[in-house]
Picture (cartoon, chains in turn purple, green):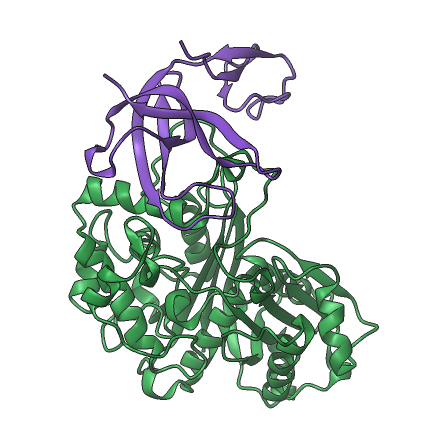
Length: 116
Length: 379
């Protein structure tokens, strides 16, 4: 079971944002509450990245995932061959090692993978 | 507001100048623009310098080389739109009557980063998670290809056209033609892009001298009028957005055409921000040259090539001329001013009377682009 990603929802105007913020970009209210996000979404677009800054393990698949909360998340897509990807296909939250951080330690992050 | 004209332009050939400082890259372009305009150093009331990654006081570092100091110098950063945004500040100053003559500089030295993709701001959430510009445009391309049936071969033709134009431009970084096969089989960068779908990294500088049109007759430089000077920021959106529609360009183009009192049908030559092949096609649509999804027709039937009805990027654009980011906006203006003056030799757009430059800057989350500036010029 993966922990859900947390965004923010504005208690005054209902705006939803990821990643979490302290002030609402719609109405400037500071009454923001945590918003646990759905773990399944659809793959809006992707690109297989072959050349990237130091640290990232290439190739990797960069993508945008649309969640039912109407939040779009930039992510790495893991556990999939590029040719198996389809526009708007269902993907679910997971976690993965994406490279190494500035101290040479494994860089763990959320990611998405084809669902089902 | 007073009408403003460009009376002098200059640029250095874009390329790699590892051994030179930013100041030494820029001063020849500035000297050329001043010489072209015929103004004396003392005629210049203010200077604006656009650079994205050139560091502090870039304008002062450049202008001290030529002894142009003691005047107001303002440095402008707006990513790839840095020098086009600087140009607009100069335009405002002259149009408002605060200054009569102003100098605009665009300069960048990307070789100092040692190559690779453009370094972006690591505080940004998406950048911190591995977003790079080729991937961002690559996703736009992937979605556009899905939505509108564009093929990889058609996309490659943008680069072929660009290189064909660039081969005619002595200031271009790439001056050799390429084939569709060469584009498609070059090494992959961020799919669907190979290396030849991406603008090169490099160094360069460009400059322009502007003045109030009412005093342009005092100077020898052949004036080109500024019909519209427009800068926008992108609309921040937290939710879904259509990545095949560059909203900031659509909005900016509408404003610029209204300001200028012209439409896309009146523009004879375009310089657009083709940082990657897909971008050129998106901008045909956003600038009103065709309907959504139809850009590739204009590419394939030759409309946007030299000799066609609506030539786009006769300079070779960012893909061939190069993209030292802060220098690009003014370099586009150098090309359009020369086109409108009839100074472009083998790549001259015959009888060009109205030209448009379009320059966007991005690389942060939640925006189509962070900045976009559109200028329309007429002779």
